[in-house]
Image (cartoon, rainbow, N blue to C red; front, top):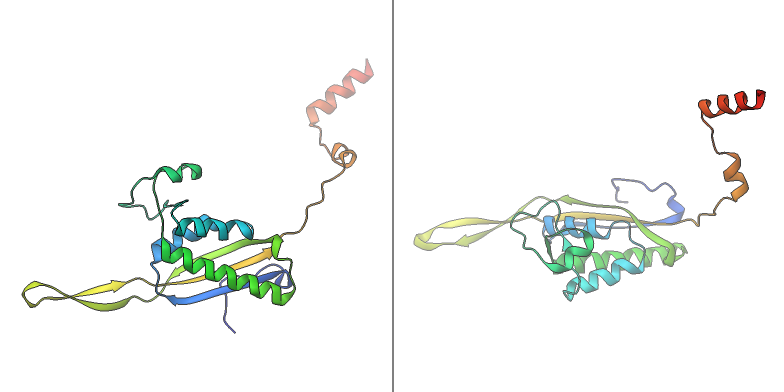
Length: 184
């Protein structure tokens, strides 16, 4: 059994998915994860498919040095964005895995929400780059560990108006004013 960094509040109403030492860039994956955090079940899959087709882009908020500007990122309220293909495909597979885990547990797939999603750096891998004049330099790759937990959102029942009106607090100043007006 693999240990997750965060346990869900209600394990019977949640499903998990995880990947270790994935050969996908850490920074791109981190930005993609932040973009899909909090989305419902169908929305992130459609969004990630659009990212692979370059119809929507991922906003780069933290790791944005040298990232170009694009018009598609205006809907996120940002100016810099990219279309990370490998990261989008990775999360599509992870979402599919989590969905099949949910079906196995007997959860309602349509009410699942991505609650915590996490991307961590994995140990760097090294290969060689051969340069001019017999030079050999390292070419480091930065893989990552990812995990996501999807939980079933409970239906929020709105309160009746009568109960909400009764519990409305009145300040001390208004109470004293009403009491004073009642005496006169």
